[in-house]
Image (cartoon, rainbow, N blue to C red):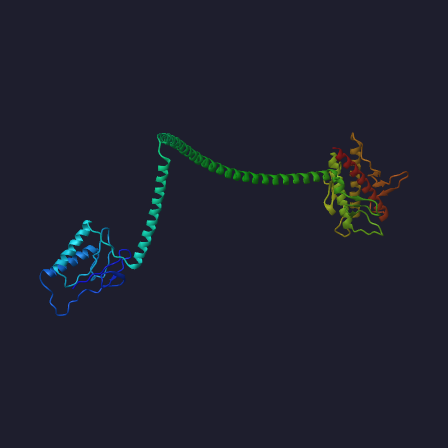
Length: 433
């Protein structure tokens, strides 16, 4: 037994046939025209062979596999579908007629309507209506153009004018083509120039970035050098201010400060002397004698004086003088009570030697070309006396033996007064140099 399935040529869905052989709607399968009852024996002979050949022809013509394999292939160009159904009771004549019709379709002598479903048929009709309307519109346009040409006529002059216009249009076309070529050439040259300009711009941008980096580095160095310069200028101004202050400063008066306006004179805040109302210890007095010895030694070195007979050795509160002779004893310029301390007689000899050194300094200064130092108090080194300035001045001894504290302190005050005047003289001389 054989069965046929027909498919829509647009959506490839199976078609359902009515009793009259027309296609209606969509269906999944077609019922066979005749079924063989169980137990029937198939016919033998030409009829069975013809039906088998027709089934093979329909299967080859439709481009699909038989319903037994369950697959449907898409038709290629030139495929066709046989409309109708083969039953098991068809005759050889009907089979030959079908085969002849098939060959006529293949040879193009007969057209065969392709089976379509209802929906695809509607779409096809709409498409054909649209094409028909378009064709009718084009036909109307052509008719109007033809009527216009017929009414206008077609003289030789107009044809020649149209020929001339055509030639002019061709020449204009050639000219425009030439201009187009020139424009294309200009565009190519402009593109090359633009590319070169871009390369040059990129190079300039790199150089600009490098310039900014170099400028930033140099600017940073400049700021560092400016900071160093400002620091050096500040140091210079400070040094100049210090120099000006030092130039205005009296080194001698700054190093040795003598005060003789009180009851007891002092040098560098060490009091030299002692009064019943102002008791001063021997330690402070010895330190004051050490400062006085240092001052006298500095003054002698300033004027280039070498003392005769004695040499000053300032050692703070244990200063002393050395005699320049052989095996000469040291003369202590200090005193403190006790068995181990120097005697008063030794201290007095040291005070006399100190007064002698002061006298040598005054004499050395007065021998110079410049005006000598003005020491207001006259000194008598041999007797150990110092005279108070003024008419009828009284002399005071610098010895401690057989002397009172008031007169001894007065003598030491006059000694510091002479030192104060010597400092003024040395300071003025130093400033002049």
